[in-house]
Length: 436
Ligand SMILES: *Cc1c(COP(=O)(O)O)cnc(C)c1O
Image (cartoon, rainbow, N blue to C red):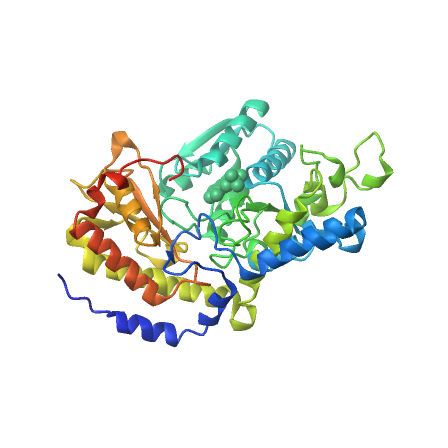
């Protein structure tokens, strides 16, 4: 066994000195679990069950339909949107919480295409990354079919400058890549796309609540993001959508439902969009889910008096650096390789590892063995035909709200033991479930 420079005691001392350590008390983490999957489904906040219970028994059960007014249900998408705005560098009134990330992407990409067609006719490509989350690519594929455009996929960020050509209408990127954790420089990429005459849509699914985001400062055009990852909103939580004020009142978004109307309760037969981001609401908001999402967002806002996203980011970088250092020191000779950028500035709040040959195929079972030990990460399949270039990935998310340095140390030690003992070879860890 290699001796580590960082000891578990060092990690415990770091936790004791951590000014953010108290934020963990906001969560109902099950005992014995090291949860490194907040990038996929955030942990349940303690406040959520109480709040949702009150919405059910009092607001719905007792006050019934009056609650649309008395409990301010109608304002909930905007109120939660305003809270998310504080985390992504947007102004009050610019963000709305609604629908899913996929649906919100459909809305903003439609708007982006229409704006491009009006302002820069003749541009016919949408550019994204082949490694983008599939739903983003599927939505873009569908809109390209509708609008007679072409989806061009780049295979690496090095190809980005060449893709910013005179044909580009909309650049559609996820700021932090779901597989590798690679983080784009939002300001620089936005400026380059604008210089090329294109619009930029940012998917913040792995950014909101994970890394500091400044949509206004970056002069982005549109953004969407996810409620159930780092915002801890619960499974299938509503997502959010932002449009720059210079764009928001241009065109309707295509899902022109009645609650995006300027006067829904006049029940007119024709559609008049509401001013501002409200028009990005389609139908009746999911109140129970929004109540849960608000509790989740509040857990991130609770860091504001302690330095907010900047402080969370500082801790997140320290956690991921510590994980990389320990994983390389203690597990490299067992085949573990870093699959995320080594440079912290290019990394979100997750670290991905891959396994070198002959363990190419072992990733799924290793994650299953870790989960059985209470260390919860996840597995993202690579390209079976090109595992050297697109390997299977062991993905570990570090949510600084509830993960500490001793957790990092323990997680690496479990990984070392799972590999060193070949525990992962047990049959029970090699049966694939539908969700990985
Ligand atoms: C998680 C994620 C989504 C999820 O979309 P849903 O509509 O909630 O299923 C979309 N895009 C990216 C980049 C994601 O990481």
